[in-house]
Image (spheres, rainbow, N blue to C red):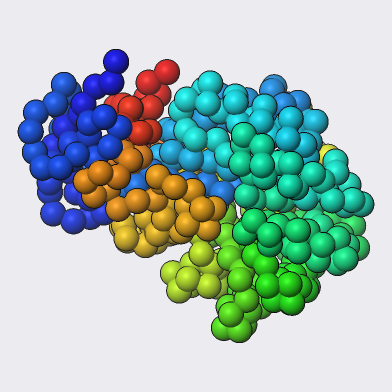
Length: 422
Ligand SMILES: [Zn+2]
């Protein structure tokens, strides 16, 4: 039974207070009555956030996350759609696996779960996966990525770009030249030298991005660069965009806030791939995000089971959970620039992915995919309080601004009063 909701006194994207009526799954015209009224005094409405880079771990590592627990974490973070990375077990490299993930997302019903297909069979980087079969499957895959691994072979990368061009698909690259990062434990620089840890040099990322924007230009196909982490990568992207290359790029919340100095604690919660970089990289990434050289924020939500994370630095798996803290981190970095936040976290990712019904302007008739944020609230991050099945947040004990009060997916609340509805 569908209910209608009157969201009273809300500020849409920081504008004047107004009432939003939600009925039959869409934003309705004008005022009127509703089954339920939500007092939204002091709250800001944003289009539901869209994450182009989430690891949901199912199938295969349900001890770390499931489609359902990850969907709940996403809804609590203000998301209405997430794209699930392909590095599951089995790998999402066939129509069967992407359809399984898609179906699990529909069953959970908390966010739209859109599977990303692998570029190569088993993420092994040797032969192309069944890109066409995944594209025409029920999951309708448009984005392909070997994330976790780089498609390092330039011939294979070229063929992948050529293949997806036919249906306006996208190759999302984890840019890491593997020969330059063998044994790497953290960013290569002053801190890695001091700590005696093998470094992951910035050039390993920048060299692959430079190669791939040239390949994308040559083929005339679409490239998306995952988790850009260095100032040099920003310069390569700026150059490519000026030339008209069809490239888009993302940055993670953690690369906008944290630096490689945190590795000095040897706490593996700060181990991530690509690694945390220097303060000057962070500054360049922030500027690029504001300017638009970097198009979007994507979480790279990477849940890990305790035994894979609470161990020695060298043995810990890289990655951080991020869905439930993404908007607060971005708010702390950008301040209350709601238009910019809506663009970088909702509209642009929806546009890049060709995802209809998300990232809209909340005008009458648009699908009611939205989130309500209390910007005046402060929250101390408690890992035990996260809905994600994993606890590997780098923000434990940190106070962050902004609380997600409610999230609606096609007019139905998935979060109310800051709590998941189911
Ligand atoms: Zn990656």
